[in-house]
Image 1 (tube, rainbow, N blue to C red):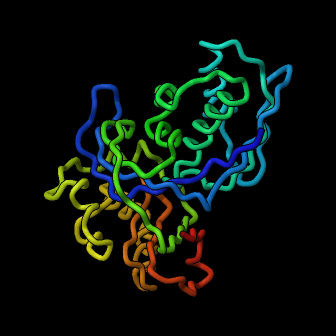
Image 2: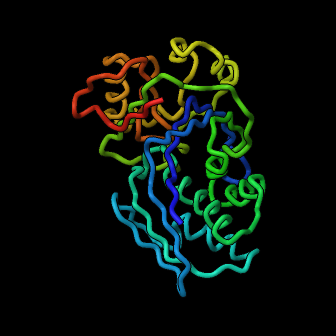
Image 3: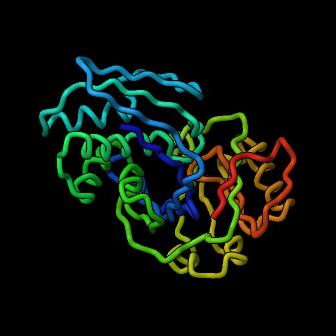
Length: 266
């Protein structure tokens, strides 16, 4: 079985308070970017092996969220081992949710492959055990997210007819470090209200609280965001804790090579 775990972007990210479990309460909008995706294949086997291609990942295989997803389901279901093949296209340390998508899509694939008949709600509960934003990728639709990023409310949001460029500078940002140095605050206009404003007004009301800290440490990320606006972006922002920056455009742009990343057509 093969699936295509896709990236996401954060439209706005307000870090509200630190939680007793070590996470933070946030408010954000998750939006799927289906044109940027990994390729994940699973085959029943005598022992579990993860083979990766594409972008270098590093780290211990047992810490990979795909393996953790399998082990998590094996605690409650009788499942065989798997040969797993992953072509990595979504950059790591980018704020695009690539690892989270891989883990959540693995849950969905195992559910289908072995006819576990788990509901999306049950899969979300498993995904929440893998990571803060993993549950989003179960339904994989635009949502307003609260809590640690796993409490969802439906929103009416479509970027139909827009173009999204995504650029990842040659740096990776540690989410833990980004949280550590970020000042907690509540916005004057809550994100749920700000997101209802016309796209042309988002830059005045919708922010990513990580940007002040991350831009001070990595000014090249700030420069990418400014270039997005220089080339006509209606709205631009760092995604998650970075380092990827996206721009939303009304028209297809002829971007210079050093700026052009991935483009999504709607």
